[in-house]
Length: 420
View: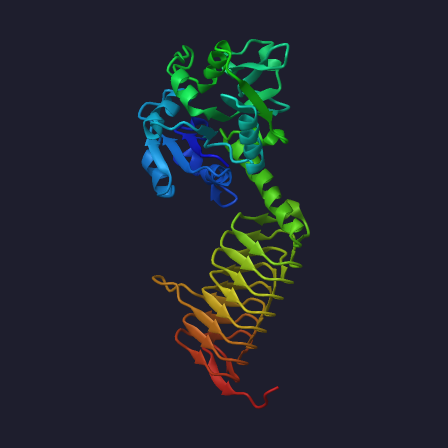
């Protein structure tokens, strides 16, 4: 692709969210909202990304990568003013600029690439991404002439009764030829109702000059959903969650019930693994092939599950590596543990990893057998083929040698009579 720059508009207060957290930092499926927009810009091969910030500038700036240029909009005077704030960073630039909104996490790179391709193939000055929705309330409407060409974008508060019936909305995504944008944006006038400068007003200015303005429609109207309320946030989470599950199923993972399964964005799952209902898998989790996970399982960040592992009912695993063909069928918690291969974790097992100051580790070697209701107070080492008897409490600092039984409260070490 030719040289492309991206400006992300993320300066708004998001007052309808009723939150002390900046709107664009609210997480969706384990990832802050703005990260989805940055990812789309990167996938569109943008050579440089600029994010215009205003409300809680420092909080958002600290979250963003240092490779991203952050620009402060000191006074929140609307989208056109936000774009003007970025102009000093693009002096002399004569290519295309993609403009995105920081609160549209459902955008896909497919739609953005189509937008850019259409813009360039038509040699347009501006191309607008639109969507057809059932309920256009709150969105700018696409105004067309009899030839079906776009002639304006009318914001909700400025739209007439007839215009409000239009179901084609402005998504808030544009591709501009930068020199013409820069030349024309200075002529946008202050909107008297909102006391802001709208970037959407530039469409009428371009049309009046006879410049080429085109549109591209999203394949799915939901892509245009902007997040303004907690209800919007919930809906976006639901849609993105289903996208994630659909991707895993296409890759050969069985999701028994997609409606009760929650998997975040940064998760890897191997082929032929089965995820049963009411399972939660958070970011930074890797699961191997042919595993059986759930129901009612919670895998927390830092968990690594090898091939052919079974983790079942009401089990929680955090920052733990579970070796190949190990089983943990029910009612157990593993935190900060290293579990070898072919280990049995009995029902009710707990690795007590936190001593009030530090998170301590538990090591369980290959083919060990951890009996039901065992409590391992970390740090603990359990040797190869060792056994903890049911109900044992293995105290802090204990090392259970290979082929040894530990039993009792506190657990004592016994030699095994026979080794299978």
